[in-house]
Length: 90
Image 1 (cartoon, rainbow, N blue to C red):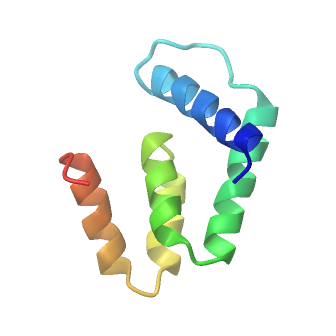
Image 2: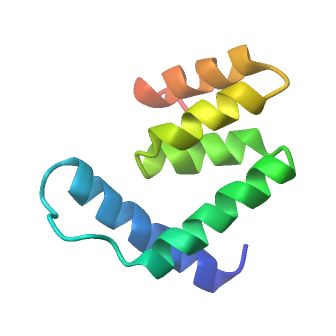
């Protein structure tokens, strides 16, 4: 992942957390969403489910978590990873 994409994902994550917590009312820049969505597409296409779960969890993208769990060869392991992230064990 290039530095620019990583910075965009970090900014998107910051904004999504604020939005999730009710601290941001305006819409997030669509260009940031496009970059993050492309990252999810690449992760799913390359079967990098762990990375997709991590980014989806950080960005509060439950829709992506659902997609990853549905597509994964081992959905149970994805669910375990999500649980570990929730309890701060990973």
